[in-house]
Length: 297
Ligand code: UTP
Image (cartoon, rainbow, N blue to C red; front, top):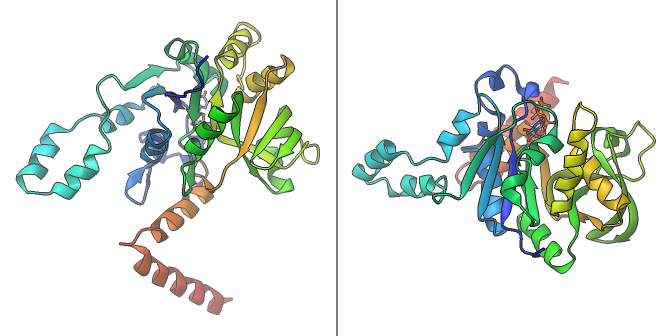
């Protein structure tokens, strides 16, 4: 197996129920932070990490995602005629090289592990990345790039890891730590959504993974076993039981849970404030409403 990671899976087949009614007709991944859809942030992060093949696991109603990455000749011609080169340049970022992007369907929302398993034939026998676009990470060096570099040094399945408050641990997959080496943590177990107070640590798994093809074999076993939600963390935990290394990578950066309403709003404010063209107006507005909220208390 090569240590180079050039393929990434984007599981986008979930129902997005926390954003109903919007997600009745708009895929969650098309919702915009300022002026770019969530999926664009994920693609840019993957490109920065050296990913060349982009595999989308989609479901019914996600057609807008396919359109988003397609060329738009009519729109491009209009912009060209009007000399809007800046906008043309922005659109260029949304285009994919021919053959670089593949879409396949998860016919039933059987869980994240199942969505990843659906892409097994396109992955073959090499390490691959998984990116959940609703986890948006603001970082100087993009999170997946940090992980790819760590993987090249220390091969083995790897999950992005982040400290969470104790009372939030039951919402995450949590790592059972073997050895804590700072940025890299070797892992002896993983628990998906532990009951309050039973978590083995406060180090939570978030939506970036680099996985070896053995994880797909583990998912294969689960598929032929019992039905129900197929969890990706269970298949990674199986790696540990079989004696293969699994690591957590404490990335540098700030993660926003854009799969939740509160996280999405926080990200909107943070990304707005990070933009030169919006910062001043937004800052003034936020200061004013905070002051009037305070005065009203
Ligand atoms: P979530 O747990 O956020 O589920 O999935 P969801 O359906 O997207 O959203 P809610 O909870 O109903 O609001 C985490 C990631 O796994 C993908 C989702 O698309 C998301 O990127 N996923 C989940 C699948 O691709 N297939 C599944 O069967 C489940």
